[in-house]
Length: 244
Image 1 (cartoon, rainbow, N blue to C red):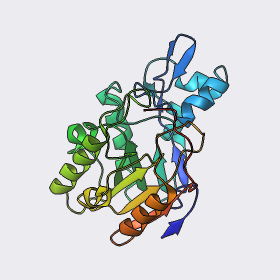
Image 2 (image 1 turned 180 degrees about the vertical axis):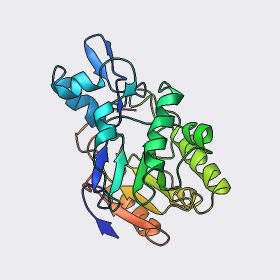
Image 3 (image 1 turned 90 degrees about the vertical axis):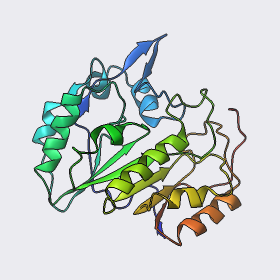
Image 4 (image 1 turned 120 degrees about the horizontal axis):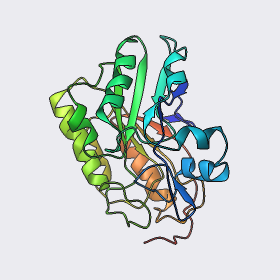
């Protein structure tokens, strides 16, 4: 078990895609999934006229300065940490340009992380070999659209299992954060994706999510630890839920 508040294997974050924010009713949303717990939304809302607000406002586009960043062969890079690389609104030509950049650095590992249930199916033949393909799934239960408008969490996992069936040597990663209450066979479902690693952590922003008891989460971690690397993030007793 690896213990850290952040993914300990990540040495660099790299966000080559700008834009994607929409202003509605004086609120700024980082992507159409509109997760109530999104830290990027909180940050951009706090500084809407700052550098981040300027970068992520407007249409999706390549952020040219990012293409000039130095990335070491020894780096493990988290791609597009400020938004979701898998949202379908991002034009194909942008994703292709990002993948071309990654492909030219074969010694460097890049983490892709998405809540999309179609991204990997759409780009399965274009994903560079040095990518770790990850999904975020907070639970295997249905999630209220008051919490997120992202695709069904179980469908995200199914897309990763499907991708793994085509590319057995692919490194799969699952981020269960912020964790919400889950079924008793959650670990067995995750095991089908044969993940290289799984991160587990609670909400950091007191958003009142429907969380599991800490003891239940610890039991899940113990089960996951039998077949994969577990990266433990924020663990605490559950808070009172205000979302259904």
